[in-house]
Amino acid sequence: MGGFLGRDILSIADFSRADIEHILKVADDMVVDPHKASERSLAGRILATVFFEPSTRTRLSFESAMKRLGGDVVSFGGLEGSSVAKGETLSDTVRMVEAYADAIVLRHPQEGAARLAAEFSSKPVINGGDGAGQHPTQTLLDLYTIWDELDTIDGRTVAFVGDLKYGRTVHSLALALCNFDVDLYCVAPPTLQLPGYILSQIKERGRDVKTANTLEELVKDVDVLYVTRIQKERFPDAAEYAKVAGSYRIDLDMLREAKKHMIIMHPLPRLGEIAPEVDRTPHAKYFQQAQNGVRVRMALLSLIFGVIP
Ligand code: NCD
Image (cartoon, rainbow, N blue to C red):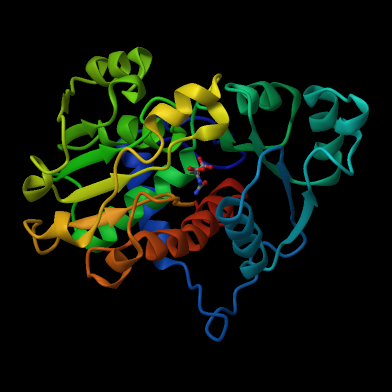
């Protein structure tokens, strides 16, 4: 298991199964309840959240996690209102931010941006999403949710539904799941299947992905249905997006044959992929999943800052 003190969190591929299991266990021990939380182990530390793309959950849960642990946050609200609007480069911005904080969470539309930032920063950089690349901390909360809801990750059948081409949460989670004994399925329009480089990495890890044409033919066999939004902002061409927009929707009818314990996950935000009436079923775990982001990010911050070994 790699040490976590001062470590960058750039890609889930950098984490072994032992690393992942350690983070999940530390996350499980985190006390999120404000009435019980007495430990302010990150008092005096500052986290910078630098987001060049919209975010609700990732940013707020990082900020909440840092504050629950007694730490502080400085925040960078995107292009307007910062010197990036004046043309400052990412490397210069990172050099400045690292002088004002002890760790940086970066979200950026360009793939590889977090890795680039880490080269310019002596402080740990956490990838909060780099274009269509990776979203490793989302993956950790996704894995935590599967483990917490189903007790084991091994032995599960996981189906990815939606935008598997541009969806960074899918790319990260698919690679992470290769550390476990799982069956992976993909259900997506032909133009939105997993990119070849992700498929190769899955194969290199000795795993395989099967493709299903419709969710209906698969739904009774899956333990985890991982639904994603079609990533409109990443389409080079609006007409291409229009062709696939709204191509699938999970509704009550579709769930009739699902296993009783089957869980539906979604990194959120959802558009029309999951009908609101599904929220009332015991399958719906996406809001709990988002809530788990706080304890998982508390665990990560505690590990990176070395207050937990
Ligand atoms: C996702 C993202 O930003 O990649 N959201 C998130 O962080 N929970 C998914 C998305 O935007 O569709």
